[in-house]
Image (cartoon, rainbow, N blue to C red; front, top):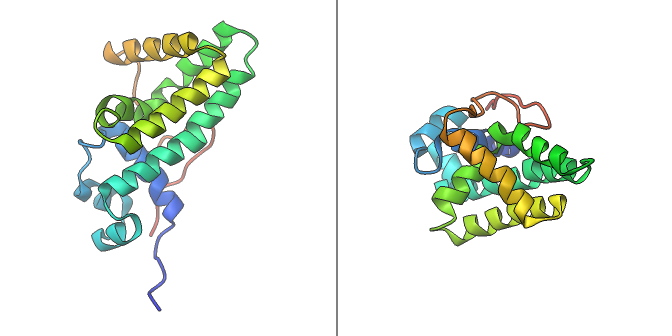
Length: 167
């Protein structure tokens, strides 16, 4: 019988999602993950298989929790202007999705599947691919001009508060 896990897997995935959102997949080393998450390298590999395995879990969690919650809020908007406003307000917390779309989706079919799923959720919520494209385009424009801050480490996701990982 193996030793019990000394960390909360869900919290590690959440904290990794924040780190990948801030620094991207390529900008986050395994050492960064080990130091930030407080998980031993061997435990990280045993639990997630690889950095990519943890990244994909974090991206799935982001789509399942954050993007799905945003899509629900957008679906309840009174009109298109409110829907776009909700997406714009959530922008700083969509860093992981943006990084995944630009950096990983073109080279990783699993990441591409998750970003496609996220876009489909938003398209269904807005009722139009064009409205999703408009909202995300505005976010990208704001981000590219420096007018939109990124979510900082320790800030909560847009729909619930988060606590630091402890091991």
